[in-house]
Image (cartoon, rainbow, N blue to C red):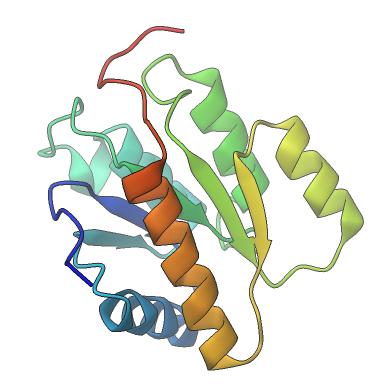
Length: 153
């Protein structure tokens, strides 16, 4: 399998170091070599997306191709991050996939109500997890036609 384009950045919003490593390992195993930026809490995720705080030097126009968003985050939970992303003109079209271990139906319903593009429960087994991450990467980075940068709805 050929390596996916590295010019498409993935923002992984995940506070669990083991899940971060599993996700990165799954990407490598699937030959997905895109740049992955890891935000370990909701505030850091929004700082990256809006090019502020520690990420103020990042060009605000260079948005990630995909956001993989955990729900249970410190400082600001994933649903609040999603709400902020969807309310801002600059980021409202960025694909956001909720990638969580939450089994709460209310999380699923609220995630879609707030504009999530997809909701994926993290499998416990690494082989299944790696396959899920591979499929997410292939779909959102290769198959899906994303809006142009700065595109208006």
